[in-house]
Length: 136
Image 1 (tube, one colour):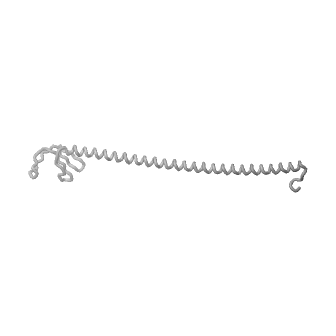
Image 2 (cartoon, rainbow, N blue to C red):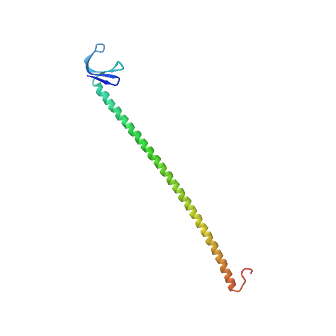
Image 3 (cartoon, one colour):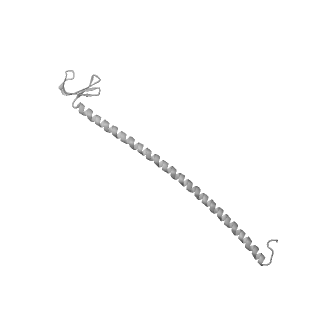
């Protein structure tokens, strides 16, 4: 049986006679680029197994690359979410600062109002006591 594999020629179960190497038996012969590359048992089976292993290795490499890409995508998404979270925290901090400033302004106005009320009360008391208010 003769099997062609791309530019290779595989002869299965052929009779090989090679007096120089003392070979006279049935075996497989692989011819690559016009030269005998290999003589032995089940060459095609080994090459097919090797092809399967290479394909499995390539599939695993592709799966690994896909997982790496997915991991990179997830890391990017995580970074984006962290950035948004940081932005929201900054806005929250700014709003808290503004609220604190407004509370301080309110407290200052309350203090001023209290001081004015105290002054008004003092003037009333002086008026009721029959005294002129603060130099009047």
